[in-house]
Length: 261
Image (cartoon, rainbow, N blue to C red; front, side, top):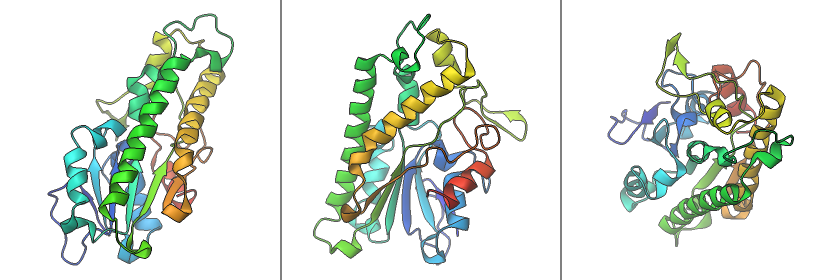
């Protein structure tokens, strides 16, 4: 039940991928077994006939990259007639890195602001969500277009998600005690904007951001169109299920896979 990371990875005999996944580090972080969502799904949730997954994207990938950037061609190739006939589902993970690139849509100056919601620049926030909605909508459209004319039961299920309430604690990525060149992501943006240095206040900011991502993607959730939004909010324990600011640990990914996913 392998997960193949990237196009060109040798396919094991008799183990052609039945699921196409394109995503950021929740699908890729880090590669050893058990440390990302795809590995957990493959080993603990999916039936053997559907447990082989091809993953596109990479750590740090943005949703924009799947539509107009460096992963767009690979994604479109997999939707072509040679490859798409093998896929029963498409999994998409994206939006977190886009939000980081937007500095979490915070105001440039949040000093003295006493309400977490008031720290957001509403025009920037709305612009970010409009872009995320457009990119996600484009991907779902392209998937449906690739299978146009096929009987409904032959069209793939599409799964998207909205992450969980990550801890803005300034912890960067590491593996086996060795620092990795990723992060932190949330605390620096909040520090730059001079957000009040109160863990509960900052956690509420994250909650508002994740809830807005969920609400932005919610209109795409439609069983009749075989599109499903996995609502993973509130699944993870803030103290024990996170490896750093953005990534669950193996226990956390297991909880996500065997719970909301």
